[in-house]
Length: 472
Image 1 (cartoon, rainbow, N blue to C red):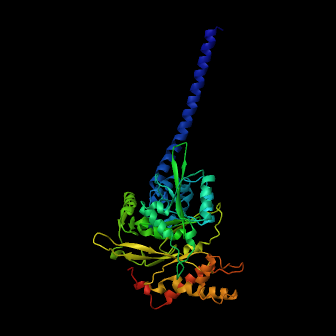
Image 2: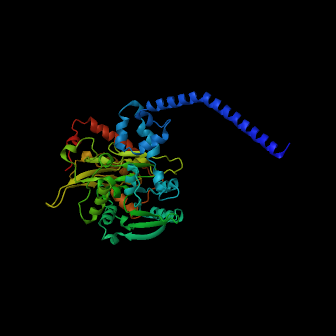
């Protein structure tokens, strides 16, 4: 057989084989086509039958669910939870995915869990624009991280951690007198210097050196620069945050295990912020910044806005029913030695400051002085307004009389019969004349119970002065 004949036979065989395969494919296609068409029809019908409720369920459309929910504000989420039973748990479900503090912290630190452990160890708090971004679920690229920590060994240890563990470099450390040209920073420093007992100034804390340290870290890959400001405070960080800011939208607190917004209704539902300082050269810039970000500035409440559900109330406490609190996952975070009840029972008041001239506007002033006792391990805040109804102040009306007696009992047991007020003993403690013995009792664990009792007594009282008392 010639080579040409052999080649022709092979070509013919290949053609027959291809034709056989093609016929087999056509038969299979004809067999499967009706099933495929039916599947497509069923799938299209199933898609057409979907409603918004189906896509607001994480299963089976999680990518769509995540995308939709990322465009919802907290007002829309709350509204949806009230529409039907199927969506009643939407907010609780989104807490795990939409409000992730560690995700935001990754912009500034390598390990958010280690950073929050440091916060808990040194009782540090985060506030400022980072807290606003957390609650609003946005990212402002030009923002920094503001950390408030009590001056002294804790602040020094925190700064050392930023340098040695997070690779930051200390760029500047400004003291109070260095902020004469920065009114907002000067105001924070001035407020941070206030340190009062219930009845007299507490001498000795001027030894703490107040300053603001700026730390920078450069990223060689994308040329980004991360900025952290470590604010040393003479008093507690929470008091500085309450009394130092210029408008309500930025009065938020992030601790090692939770975030608390003090004025959530106007800030994140109505996008309105109220003045906490007089408008001057130091507040114009920050107020304009938040106006550009979508918040309208209003001096004080309009009369029709003053309701029992509005956060602008005469007396408040951190973590009360007017606050928005989000707890964090702390499985990999070292627990703080300070109980949550300390932060949750810091009391303050709002006082209206009337304009002094025709060119000024009214604003609110947050009143929060430190409450200290030798039988309390931690420091608290209270109203401390002499013209304020005493029964509206939890610490002045309820706590102070009890710790006065408890302090005197402990001092008498130690032979301090000549000390008639426990505040004198506290001054002696600061001056090194009095050393607390190891068996000395503290009553911080009673604060939450006392607060509940005080609230119940107020509800039982026939004369609820708080209902008729208005911010003056």
